[in-house]
Image (tube, rainbow, N blue to C red; front, side, top):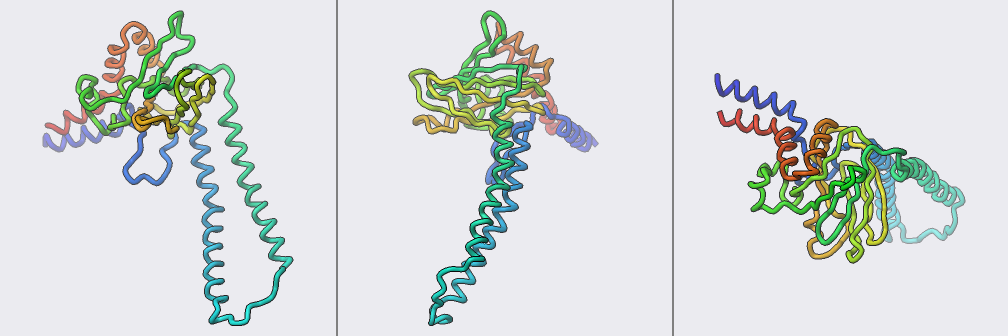
Amino acid sequence: MKKAYAALTALVCLLFASGTYADQPKPWQATLQPAATPIMREIHWFEQYTLWFIVPITLFVLILLIVVCVKFRASANPVPSRTSHNTLIEVIWTVGPVLVLLLLAIPSFNLLTAQLTLPENPDVTIKATATQWQWNYEYEGSGDNPLAFDSYLLKDQDRAAAGKEDKSIYPRLLAVDNELVLPVNKTVRVLVTAAPTDVIHAFAMPSFGIKIDAVPGRLNETWFKAEREGLFYGQCSELCGKDHAFMPIAIRVVSEDKYKQWLSAAASDLPGAYKTLMAATDGPAKTVDVAEAQ
């Protein structure tokens, strides 16, 4: 009876433990990560849309190649045709690709416009500065002394002290010591650059559909609006040196109330603010662990 109750409790906790949901790459993954922003939903749609052109064209070309190999091989066609022009075929292979490119260009330009047009009056503005090999985040407009901190790759020996031993939530080589904390359903503007004496990096978050270069001496900008809470992972996507693979990006999206509480506490005690936030967001996972142990 106790085992059945424990299993039921664990199931309920899993169903409602949205705070522990983490978007990250999966082994042998061949598709895009689940969308967490409107832009990423459009990217998902555009990918599926292009497949309706790519698959038929690929099959059509394959069939043509097979027909040519079989019908026009030397043994089956010893006297080749001397035909050099066919007006109908030339019109088709000129007009056809133009129409396909037109059908791809219109939604592509619409998507690019949505990505590059920043909404007016964003709710939160973040400055992300890349260096070899870490990220520095600064919360613009958060007071006379804006909150700023570094975000490093979480080392295995530091997991216990940070309370991040669960690798299903904090995966190896993607988890960081200090996540970028942001509110859900709020427009976030991200200013991206690199240290003046550094190299080019790139700020990329697959679930948000954003990827933009961090160039020394130049300030690029992008935006997103996360529509669900969770822990999202990305990486530097520009070859930036020997530790390029060890420069992850982690964004923790929480409710507006939790975000405000964290931002207020982080101004004076960043480690304590993270522990309080993790206790609030990772709580359901701990309940599951206890239920399974009974």
